[in-house]
Image 1 (spheres, helix red, strand yellow):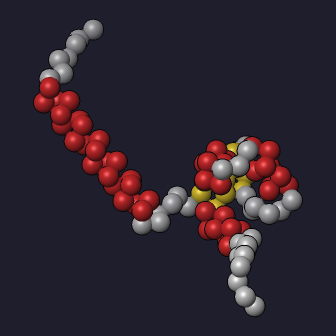
Image 2 (image 1 turned 90 degrees about the vertical axis):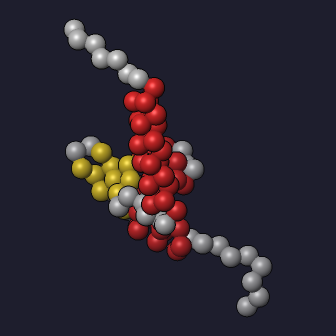
Length: 94
């Protein structure tokens, strides 16, 4: 089994490439660019809800979803619409 030696310069180069990739990801997120479709775990992280709550949102029709091959996907635009539709504003004078 051949071995290859990794030098300090190799590690430095890898570090710079990794930092560039992270910067690109952060820049895209700060511009509001989310993925078009999110998996359940990503939606739970985004909304800070439990698996049971997410299931209830699906069952009662609050959160639309698509199921492909046993994996449930959620459209980020639909999530945004649900959040805006359920927005509660307190303290506004009518």
